[in-house]
Length: 138
Image 1: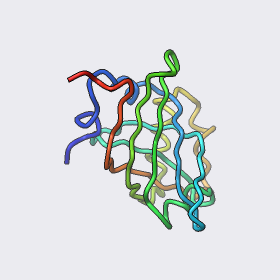
Image 2: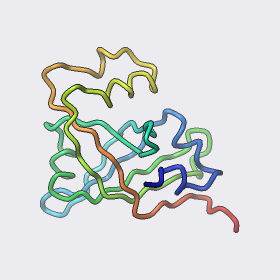
Image 3: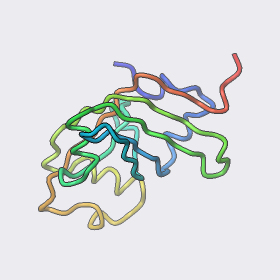
Image 4: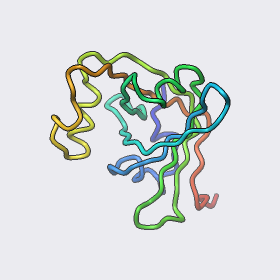
């Protein structure tokens, strides 16, 4: 399976390799959009991933409708963006392996993110379309 970096123009790959905050948009049970700020990372398998708990609205939305959009804005140039239109795959993460990776990537104390009583899931974003702006000439 091709990794996310293979689907993103070289000009925008840094947006996936730098610890930034993205906007995750999901659709609720009534068909209304819901957006929230999230962290993301490219995992060792090359896939774009997130980590969420089962008590969050975004988890409930993705469980009911896996279609989502991850929108990343370059913090140095807000006109440079990367949009990943995807289908989310939710996988139970009882050992909290993925969220522990986030602590390292985002350079925060693991105790801020890892709560033993939380029901954690890894979100794997399966891209349907990737949109880089400004568009790459070609």
